[in-house]
Amino acid sequence: MKLRIVPARTGLDWVKGGILVFRRQPLAMAALFFLSMTAISVVSLFPLIGPALALVLLPSVTLAMMVASAEAMQGRFPTPDVLLVAFRTGRHSLRHMLQLGALYAAGFLLVIGLSALIDGGQFALVYLGQAELTEEVVQSASFQGAMWLSMALYLPLSLLFWHAPGLVHWHGVPPVKSLFFSIVACVRNLGAFTMYGLGWMGVFAIGGLVTSLLAGFLGGSLGALSGIMVGLAMVMATMLFGSIVFTFRDCFEPPGRSAERPDDEERPATPPPTDGPAPHD
Image (cartoon, rainbow, N blue to C red; front, side, top):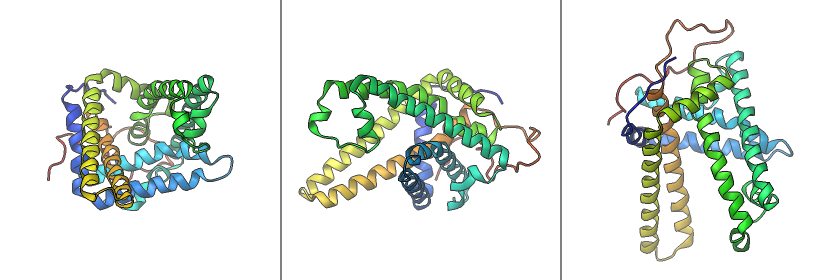
């Protein structure tokens, strides 16, 4: 496995790639994202262990969307079975993906726990859906401090896990090593990831503008406006998740066919993305 360093402008290509993949398979990609989020929501409802278990499964959801995008890139229709890709490539990979999920859950809960040191856990309760978000709570200085601390701490956590699912799945990298390689790739390509972040901020800003314009045309119809906002947010989130595979493709050399794998493990159901430009219609 070899790390690639790409120009800063590549970050905008990643954004474009996520949009083009969605345009190529809009119904399939949106349905897969909706199903994955629904599954996570249902799992989180289990008493006691539900929220933690949902966090454990999040890297598998990221991998599923990466595989779905790779399928669409190669001209294939991504089917719902990609949602189980993390669980169908052998016991060795399954164990590594669950370990990766456990590490993510631990890191996320640590971030939430540290925020409680500022506001006594109010932000954590609101974020986890255990308390109501009111105007009084939002205006609280301690709540805002906890929120900003959580955002600052979550950034390095997200960089640690950004490429990790793909590294575990396609390169067979152990979970802890995948975190190291992931954050190194993100830091070494900081310019590209900065442009990537700015690009998505622009996309979401345009989405907000479209929503505002539609609100004016609808004359304040709250029901219709809420439906549009939810649908637009779903589309943009799907495109964002669909673009992750482009960042992975450009940051790492494809694995060689001669790479050793445990005897009980099958080859990944979908090959990693190939070299070359983002797909075009």
